[in-house]
Structures are given as C-alpha cells and as structure tokens.
Length: 380
Image (cartoon, rainbow, N blue to C red; front, side, top):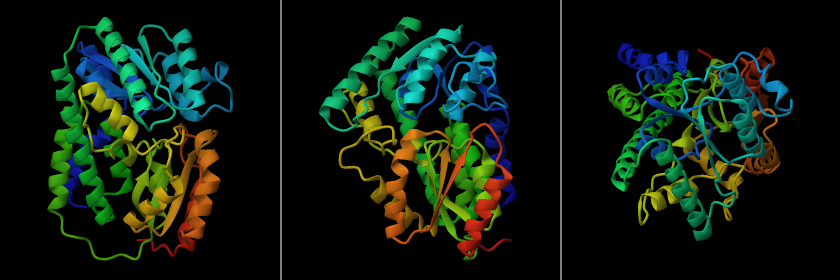
C-alpha cells in the first residue's frame, strides 16, 4: 500500500466514520435528503428531483426502541434502521423511500409511516417477478407514479434532467466496476476494509463527489506495480448486507484475500450496465429489473447456484464465505441449493450468521480462522 493510496482512501474512511454526517451537513445547508434501504431504489429519479439519496443501513448500538414495534425475529438491518429513526438520528431526512423487497421491509414500511414523523414517505412496489415485458411495464408505471409524488413534494423536472442523472450514475457504476476489476486482479492493492469504505461511502455522499474521489483512487492504484505472487487463498463473500468492516477484515486477518463479493452492499449495486429504453423511465425500469436478482425476487431462468459458480471462477476463488444476516429468510431459502451446487463443484464454503449492528464476535473470528486454516492460509 502506497502513501498516495492511503491519503486518497482517507476521504472514503472519513465518511464511514460518521455515516450520516455528510447528509446532515447537506440538510443543514438547505439540501433535500432522501433515505432508502435497498439497491432496487431508483436513485437516479431521486437525484433528478433534487435530493441527495442516502442509504440507511442502521449503524446503531441498540435496537431497544425498535424491538417494541418489530418482532425479535426481524432482521437486524430493519431493527437498527428503525431504531435510528425512532431516536431522532434521521431527522435530517425530508423523504424516506421504501422499495418492496422482502416481507420484513414491507412490514417496516407501515411501521415507519405510523411512528416516524417529520418526513414524507414513498413506497415503490418493485415487482417480485423481475423478468418479462409485463414486469417492466408494471415497474415503469410505478416509476411514473413515484415521479408524480416527487414533483408534488417539490417541483417538476423534465426527462432531460433524469437523463443527466442516469449518465452520472452510469459513469459511477463504470468506475466502481473498474475498481473491482483492479482489486480482483491484485487484492493487495487495497485491503478489503478499505474497499468496503469505498463502497459504503458511495451510498452516503453526492455521486458527483464520490465519482471524483474514485477517479483519484483508480489513477493512484493503476500506477502501483503488481505485488509479488502470493499463496494466500482467495475468498468470494456472498450475502445481502455487510456494513461493518471487521466482518470482511477478519477474513484477511486470518490469512486470506477477499478477492470479490456478491453483496448488495458490494458488487451487485454496480453490476448492471445497460440503460437502454424508449424513454428515461422505461430505461430505468429495464435496468433495475435486469440486474442480478436479489433472493427476494424471482427471475425465471436465473440459477443462483450456477451464477455463484461462475463468480467463483471469475474471482479465481478457493472458497466461499456466506455472510448471512440472521433471520434473512430469502437467503435462508436459497442456501441449501447454493451449498449443494458449490459442493458438487468442489468449492469449500463456510456459512456464518451475523447481526448487522454488532461487531464481529470472537466465535465468528474463530470459525473464519479455522476455515482459512483448512484452505491453507498464509499469514503475514
């Protein structure tokens, strides 16, 4: 790691040290801020409407207030995010957007609207079946309705403004894919903790700013010489959300490299390229539904096991760590098939359940270290 890279990465790490500080400061300066919880949320539309889109991931030390409104078996992502709202820590939001994904988030929508005041509320019914022209037509109508709501909350904005936002977000996704490719080719260029800070900060600041920082980081990394070949095993991390660097960092501390991920706080947020359509909202509908589907969605013909086998091959991974949020039913339903598919292909894997709002436990570290040792990890 060069001194130049460390200096560039500090901008991303500073954002993650105070996740909502940038948004709070923007709101204090008169900016409109829109919160959301899912990568199916059409941020381009929020950006075009003049909002700073911010992903709410639930950095909270407790869920005491939320536990009075949500069942104990609701996932920690939902409980911690609701805790932030109930405790007034999200009072800088002008708008909260819920894009229907899993049952927990759909239930959280109503609870949030009834118990959190001071902000507008918008629900987007993202179709469960994400393939086919009927699904695209349905989602396009939802986006049209959302646009109408946003204009009611603020002022009208035309198609040209949406297209400008789409181009910005497309450039940002392209830059993130470039960074992923550089790191996959040589993980020593950037630790996984640093990579996660880049990813998480992208959900928390203006895309214009983050894109500029990315340009500096990519240019710096591209100047770095390739590191010598290493015997460290390469790991693919799979799951939904990961908002704590130690969960991924522990894997590298144990002597492995996290060569790639399949996380919605990771590569899945930036994977889809196309924005083609007859008009901006048609293009947005097609892009969001064409992405690799979340386990809460159904895409006829998509084989999640085969998809992950391909990801393992592309990352040249020696093993897979499933980082599952406790009580996440969609991933729990898919896991047995995924495990069997990888086992048939001879790919070792480890399943660990985590709570998003608490640090990595000693038990987690022990299990990861044992898996790394089995793979022949080399520390140092």
